[in-house]
Image (cartoon, rainbow, N blue to C red):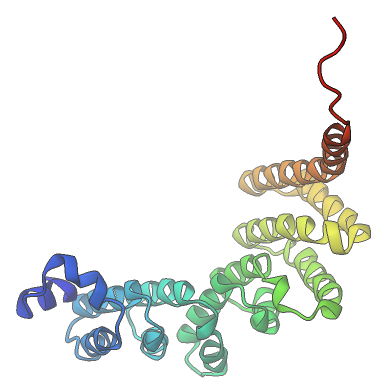
Length: 263
């Protein structure tokens, strides 16, 4: 029986009241205690899943601790929970990066990549380029494409975008196809982002995508490139024609109404 089911039975909590209780600190402490007192892998997994699903900020330290348990299922659940909680978890995750527990560090990078907070930029860049684990490089490469540029000071956006562009151009040549695939995904989102801030750099992305399409041995990567090219072209098309449509709509709306014409 899951933790919430146990609590509902023992406390005789009506089903329609459970969601209200799900949001208070008392529930957080109950779910945290369930994780700490789990005496088997299955119970630990169930407890972490329910703690993650609650989405309570107080659970961040416990979810981060779960990244270091020898329980991949619990780690996956903890990553999902941390991503859902979002940017408040970032400082604690960045502290974990210096931990000697490589497994926990790898899971932390996955969580940071999923959150997309700009404070994780340096960590994601290093992991994407140098980590020995292909799954970590993949997650970090994907995270570079989900960074929230609005979190950066306006005067730093262009320089950081160029830094990310240089990294992704390099990562797109990774020996592992799954990392190249992630890099292509991020090049797509970056191309759309810099169309406004750095339009003169956009050709570097389109040229690299075409080079990958022409030379990459993996069908999955080439297929993803074609999709990226289509999305970028659609975005360019919208940017070209949107001002024209706006002008046309304005012109039509500004024509004065003169009543019915002569019969």
